Length: 78
Image (cartoon, rainbow, N blue to C red):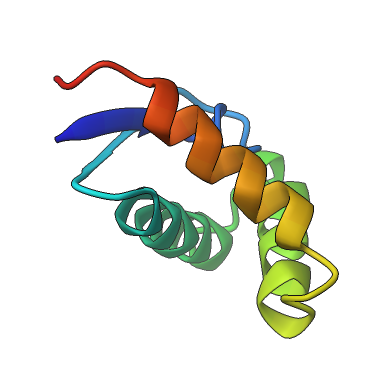
């Protein structure tokens, strides 16, 4: 199990997401950003817009995805 924060994934806060894989924490971040958007949190809106763009254009976003996977791989187990 490893941990990445919202800010490590491009967001504005330090909420921790834990997962067995990079995909686990990326999906947790997506859910977190959706919740913050629904709550009207303007600070999270740019990150939410970026995430929406990545889901809509996955080929274009491969560099971000690869970077997050590498960052996750480099983390120690927690």
